[in-house]
Image 1 (tube, one colour):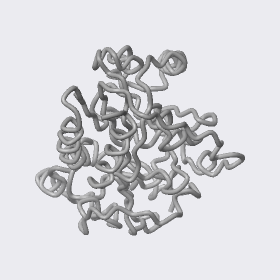
Image 2 (tube, rainbow, N blue to C red; image 1 turned 180 degrees about the horizontal axis):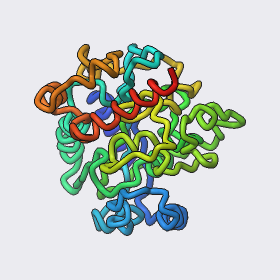
Image 3 (tube, rainbow, N blue to C red; image 1 turned 30 degrees about the horizontal axis):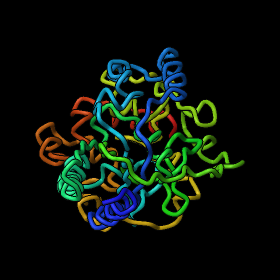
Length: 314
Protein backbone atom coordinates (compact mmCIF):
# COMPACT_ATOMS: atom_id res chain seq x y z
CA UNK A 1 0.00 0.00 0.00
CA UNK A 2 1.55 3.32 -1.07
CA UNK A 3 1.84 6.39 1.12
CA UNK A 4 -0.92 8.25 -0.72
CA UNK A 5 -3.46 5.54 0.07
CA UNK A 6 -2.26 5.18 3.66
CA UNK A 7 -2.45 8.95 4.16
CA UNK A 8 -5.99 9.11 2.82
CA UNK A 9 -7.13 6.20 4.99
CA UNK A 10 -5.61 7.71 8.13
CA UNK A 11 -7.46 10.99 7.58
CA UNK A 12 -10.68 9.11 6.96
CA UNK A 13 -10.29 7.09 10.16
CA UNK A 14 -9.37 10.17 12.19
CA UNK A 15 -12.61 11.80 11.09
CA UNK A 16 -14.57 8.69 12.07
CA UNK A 17 -13.17 8.99 15.60
CA UNK A 18 -14.36 12.58 15.86
CA UNK A 19 -11.19 14.51 15.12
CA UNK A 20 -12.02 17.73 13.30
CA UNK A 21 -8.56 18.18 11.82
CA UNK A 22 -5.79 15.83 10.72
CA UNK A 23 -2.51 16.74 9.05
CA UNK A 24 0.92 15.20 8.41
CA UNK A 25 4.46 16.53 8.69
CA UNK A 26 7.89 15.00 8.31
CA UNK A 27 9.58 13.95 11.55
CA UNK A 28 12.76 15.98 11.96
CA UNK A 29 14.81 17.82 14.55
CA UNK A 30 13.34 21.23 15.33
CA UNK A 31 16.55 23.24 14.91
CA UNK A 32 14.95 26.67 14.44
CA UNK A 33 12.38 26.17 17.19
CA UNK A 34 15.10 24.87 19.54
CA UNK A 35 16.83 28.27 19.51
CA UNK A 36 13.65 30.17 20.42
CA UNK A 37 12.54 27.58 22.99
CA UNK A 38 15.92 27.66 24.76
CA UNK A 39 15.90 31.47 24.86
CA UNK A 40 12.35 31.42 26.29
CA UNK A 41 13.43 28.99 29.00
CA UNK A 42 16.64 30.94 29.75
CA UNK A 43 14.53 34.05 30.26
CA UNK A 44 12.39 32.09 32.78
CA UNK A 45 9.22 32.70 30.79
CA UNK A 46 8.14 29.18 31.79
CA UNK A 47 7.79 30.33 35.43
CA UNK A 48 8.46 27.31 37.68
CA UNK A 49 7.29 24.68 35.16
CA UNK A 50 10.67 23.00 35.34
CA UNK A 51 9.45 19.87 33.60
CA UNK A 52 9.80 21.85 30.38
CA UNK A 53 13.55 22.08 31.04
CA UNK A 54 13.83 18.43 32.02
CA UNK A 55 12.48 17.19 28.69
CA UNK A 56 14.08 19.86 26.50
CA UNK A 57 16.09 17.53 24.23
CA UNK A 58 13.12 15.26 23.53
CA UNK A 59 10.83 18.19 22.77
CA UNK A 60 13.03 19.36 19.92
CA UNK A 61 14.07 15.90 18.71
CA UNK A 62 11.28 13.35 18.10
CA UNK A 63 13.88 10.66 17.33
CA UNK A 64 14.76 10.58 21.04
CA UNK A 65 11.15 9.49 21.63
CA UNK A 66 10.70 7.14 18.68
CA UNK A 67 14.03 6.53 16.88
CA UNK A 68 12.33 5.03 13.83
CA UNK A 69 9.80 7.87 13.43
CA UNK A 70 9.29 9.08 9.88
CA UNK A 71 6.16 11.23 10.22
CA UNK A 72 4.08 13.16 12.73
CA UNK A 73 0.30 12.98 12.55
CA UNK A 74 -1.30 16.06 14.15
CA UNK A 75 -4.92 15.90 15.25
CA UNK A 76 -7.41 18.38 16.68
CA UNK A 77 -10.54 17.63 18.70
CA UNK A 78 -13.03 20.47 19.23
CA UNK A 79 -14.21 21.06 22.81
CA UNK A 80 -16.14 24.32 22.51
CA UNK A 81 -19.85 24.29 23.42
CA UNK A 82 -22.78 26.69 22.84
CA UNK A 83 -22.65 27.84 26.48
CA UNK A 84 -21.20 31.18 27.60
CA UNK A 85 -19.94 32.83 30.76
CA UNK A 86 -22.07 35.52 32.36
CA UNK A 87 -19.84 38.58 32.64
CA UNK A 88 -20.49 39.87 36.16
CA UNK A 89 -18.14 40.62 39.03
CA UNK A 90 -19.89 38.06 41.24
CA UNK A 91 -19.58 35.17 38.77
CA UNK A 92 -16.62 32.77 38.80
CA UNK A 93 -15.06 31.82 35.47
CA UNK A 94 -13.64 28.41 34.54
CA UNK A 95 -11.77 27.65 31.33
CA UNK A 96 -13.99 25.98 28.72
CA UNK A 97 -11.85 22.88 28.39
CA UNK A 98 -12.52 22.03 32.05
CA UNK A 99 -16.30 22.55 32.03
CA UNK A 100 -17.21 18.93 31.47
CA UNK A 101 -17.40 15.80 33.59
CA UNK A 102 -14.29 14.08 32.24
CA UNK A 103 -10.59 14.88 31.95
CA UNK A 104 -9.82 15.42 28.27
CA UNK A 105 -6.69 13.28 28.50
CA UNK A 106 -8.81 10.21 29.24
CA UNK A 107 -11.46 11.02 26.64
CA UNK A 108 -8.98 11.61 23.82
CA UNK A 109 -6.77 8.67 24.77
CA UNK A 110 -9.77 6.36 24.43
CA UNK A 111 -10.07 7.60 20.87
CA UNK A 112 -6.36 7.51 20.07
CA UNK A 113 -5.79 3.94 21.21
CA UNK A 114 -8.23 2.26 18.77
CA UNK A 115 -7.31 4.78 16.05
CA UNK A 116 -3.65 3.77 16.35
CA UNK A 117 -4.65 0.11 16.32
CA UNK A 118 -6.56 0.61 13.07
CA UNK A 119 -3.67 2.55 11.53
CA UNK A 120 -1.26 -0.27 12.39
CA UNK A 121 -3.57 -2.74 10.65
CA UNK A 122 -3.12 -0.87 7.36
CA UNK A 123 0.34 -2.39 6.87
CA UNK A 124 2.39 -4.96 8.84
CA UNK A 125 5.40 -2.66 9.27
CA UNK A 126 3.47 0.29 10.74
CA UNK A 127 4.14 1.19 14.38
CA UNK A 128 2.68 4.18 16.22
CA UNK A 129 2.95 6.09 19.49
CA UNK A 130 0.38 8.70 20.52
CA UNK A 131 0.36 11.64 22.91
CA UNK A 132 -2.32 14.06 24.05
CA UNK A 133 -0.63 16.83 26.02
CA UNK A 134 1.06 14.14 28.12
CA UNK A 135 4.44 13.68 26.48
CA UNK A 136 7.49 15.68 25.39
CA UNK A 137 5.94 16.91 22.16
CA UNK A 138 5.75 20.51 20.97
CA UNK A 139 2.09 20.19 20.03
CA UNK A 140 1.66 23.64 18.53
CA UNK A 141 4.80 23.45 16.40
CA UNK A 142 3.81 20.11 14.89
CA UNK A 143 0.23 21.29 14.36
CA UNK A 144 1.51 24.29 12.39
CA UNK A 145 3.94 22.15 10.40
CA UNK A 146 1.13 19.70 9.62
CA UNK A 147 -1.06 22.47 8.26
CA UNK A 148 -4.01 22.06 10.62
CA UNK A 149 -3.56 25.61 11.87
CA UNK A 150 -1.19 28.53 12.32
CA UNK A 151 0.19 30.16 15.44
CA UNK A 152 -1.89 33.09 16.63
CA UNK A 153 -0.52 36.15 18.41
CA UNK A 154 -1.88 34.64 21.64
CA UNK A 155 0.40 31.60 20.98
CA UNK A 156 -2.52 29.23 20.43
CA UNK A 157 -3.04 27.39 17.17
CA UNK A 158 -5.80 28.89 15.03
CA UNK A 159 -7.59 27.10 12.23
CA UNK A 160 -9.35 29.63 10.00
CA UNK A 161 -12.46 27.44 9.69
CA UNK A 162 -12.98 26.34 13.30
CA UNK A 163 -11.02 28.74 15.51
CA UNK A 164 -8.80 27.61 18.38
CA UNK A 165 -10.96 25.83 20.96
CA UNK A 166 -9.58 22.35 20.31
CA UNK A 167 -7.25 19.84 21.93
CA UNK A 168 -4.07 18.95 20.07
CA UNK A 169 -2.53 15.50 19.97
CA UNK A 170 0.08 13.67 17.92
CA UNK A 171 0.80 10.22 16.60
CA UNK A 172 4.42 9.39 15.76
CA UNK A 173 4.52 6.83 12.96
CA UNK A 174 7.38 4.94 11.33
CA UNK A 175 6.31 5.36 7.69
CA UNK A 176 6.41 8.27 5.27
CA UNK A 177 3.11 9.98 4.49
CA UNK A 178 1.93 12.64 2.06
CA UNK A 179 2.85 15.74 4.00
CA UNK A 180 0.54 18.72 4.24
CA UNK A 181 1.68 22.27 3.61
CA UNK A 182 1.73 24.73 6.53
CA UNK A 183 -0.72 27.62 6.33
CA UNK A 184 1.25 30.38 4.64
CA UNK A 185 -1.10 33.26 5.43
CA UNK A 186 -0.69 35.47 8.49
CA UNK A 187 -4.08 34.79 10.05
CA UNK A 188 -3.83 37.59 12.62
CA UNK A 189 -2.60 40.37 10.34
CA UNK A 190 -3.10 43.69 12.17
CA UNK A 191 -5.48 42.32 14.79
CA UNK A 192 -4.45 43.05 18.39
CA UNK A 193 -7.63 41.98 20.20
CA UNK A 194 -6.03 39.19 22.23
CA UNK A 195 -3.06 41.31 23.29
CA UNK A 196 -5.27 44.21 24.33
CA UNK A 197 -7.76 41.98 26.15
CA UNK A 198 -5.26 40.05 28.30
CA UNK A 199 -5.88 41.24 31.88
CA UNK A 200 -2.24 40.79 32.91
CA UNK A 201 -0.20 41.62 29.80
CA UNK A 202 1.01 38.02 29.56
CA UNK A 203 1.26 38.33 25.76
CA UNK A 204 4.25 40.62 26.08
CA UNK A 205 4.97 40.61 22.34
CA UNK A 206 3.12 39.29 19.34
CA UNK A 207 3.39 35.48 19.39
CA UNK A 208 5.19 35.51 22.75
CA UNK A 209 3.73 34.56 26.14
CA UNK A 210 5.17 35.00 29.64
CA UNK A 211 3.77 32.20 31.83
CA UNK A 212 4.63 34.21 34.95
CA UNK A 213 1.87 36.65 34.00
CA UNK A 214 -0.57 34.14 32.54
CA UNK A 215 -3.77 33.55 34.55
CA UNK A 216 -3.89 29.93 33.40
CA UNK A 217 -0.48 29.28 34.91
CA UNK A 218 -1.24 31.19 38.10
CA UNK A 219 -4.58 29.48 38.79
CA UNK A 220 -3.53 25.94 37.83
CA UNK A 221 0.21 25.33 37.96
CA UNK A 222 1.33 27.81 40.62
CA UNK A 223 1.31 26.06 43.99
CA UNK A 224 2.47 29.12 45.92
CA UNK A 225 1.18 32.62 46.44
CA UNK A 226 -0.14 34.60 43.48
CA UNK A 227 1.54 38.02 43.19
CA UNK A 228 -0.76 40.91 44.11
CA UNK A 229 -0.26 42.62 40.75
CA UNK A 230 -1.86 39.66 38.92
CA UNK A 231 -5.50 40.47 38.14
CA UNK A 232 -7.34 37.12 37.97
CA UNK A 233 -10.41 38.86 36.51
CA UNK A 234 -12.76 36.34 38.23
CA UNK A 235 -10.99 33.32 36.72
CA UNK A 236 -10.73 30.50 39.27
CA UNK A 237 -9.38 27.83 36.91
CA UNK A 238 -7.55 28.65 33.70
CA UNK A 239 -8.36 31.58 31.42
CA UNK A 240 -9.91 31.87 27.94
CA UNK A 241 -9.81 35.65 27.52
CA UNK A 242 -7.38 35.73 24.58
CA UNK A 243 -9.39 33.08 22.75
CA UNK A 244 -12.80 34.51 23.66
CA UNK A 245 -12.03 37.75 21.81
CA UNK A 246 -10.50 36.06 18.75
CA UNK A 247 -12.68 36.61 15.65
CA UNK A 248 -11.95 33.07 14.46
CA UNK A 249 -13.83 31.75 17.48
CA UNK A 250 -17.10 33.31 16.34
CA UNK A 251 -17.71 30.46 13.89
CA UNK A 252 -19.97 28.57 16.32
CA UNK A 253 -18.18 25.27 15.75
CA UNK A 254 -19.12 23.08 18.72
CA UNK A 255 -18.29 19.60 19.96
CA UNK A 256 -20.90 16.88 19.75
CA UNK A 257 -19.36 15.09 22.74
CA UNK A 258 -21.56 16.01 25.69
CA UNK A 259 -18.83 15.00 28.13
CA UNK A 260 -17.35 18.44 27.47
CA UNK A 261 -20.63 20.25 28.12
CA UNK A 262 -20.56 22.24 31.37
CA UNK A 263 -21.63 20.71 34.66
CA UNK A 264 -24.65 22.61 35.96
CA UNK A 265 -22.99 22.78 39.37
CA UNK A 266 -20.16 24.97 38.11
CA UNK A 267 -21.15 27.10 35.10
CA UNK A 268 -21.98 30.68 36.02
CA UNK A 269 -21.91 30.07 39.75
CA UNK A 270 -21.06 32.90 42.10
CA UNK A 271 -17.67 33.14 43.74
CA UNK A 272 -19.44 33.16 47.11
CA UNK A 273 -21.27 29.92 46.36
CA UNK A 274 -18.15 28.11 45.16
CA UNK A 275 -16.15 29.40 48.13
CA UNK A 276 -18.41 27.41 50.45
CA UNK A 277 -17.45 24.05 48.99
CA UNK A 278 -15.71 21.86 51.54
CA UNK A 279 -12.67 19.85 50.48
CA UNK A 280 -14.80 16.71 50.42
CA UNK A 281 -17.42 18.40 48.26
CA UNK A 282 -14.72 19.78 45.94
CA UNK A 283 -13.15 16.36 45.46
CA UNK A 284 -16.51 14.72 44.80
CA UNK A 285 -17.81 17.42 42.43
CA UNK A 286 -14.65 17.55 40.32
CA UNK A 287 -13.61 13.91 40.49
CA UNK A 288 -12.16 12.85 37.13
CA UNK A 289 -12.04 16.42 35.78
CA UNK A 290 -9.06 18.69 35.02
CA UNK A 291 -10.06 21.00 37.89
CA UNK A 292 -8.69 18.53 40.43
CA UNK A 293 -5.23 19.51 39.15
CA UNK A 294 -5.34 22.81 41.02
CA UNK A 295 -6.16 20.96 44.28
CA UNK A 296 -8.52 22.29 46.93
CA UNK A 297 -5.94 24.71 48.36
CA UNK A 298 -5.37 26.30 44.95
CA UNK A 299 -9.11 26.45 44.29
CA UNK A 300 -9.77 28.26 47.57
CA UNK A 301 -6.81 30.59 47.02
CA UNK A 302 -8.08 31.62 43.58
CA UNK A 303 -11.61 32.29 44.83
CA UNK A 304 -10.46 34.25 47.86
CA UNK A 305 -8.21 36.48 45.72
CA UNK A 306 -11.10 37.29 43.38
CA UNK A 307 -13.50 37.95 46.25
CA UNK A 308 -10.98 40.25 47.92
CA UNK A 309 -10.34 42.17 44.69
CA UNK A 310 -14.05 42.62 44.03
CA UNK A 311 -14.64 43.74 47.60
CA UNK A 312 -11.90 46.36 47.34
CA UNK A 313 -13.33 47.63 44.06
CA UNK A 314 -16.93 47.88 45.23
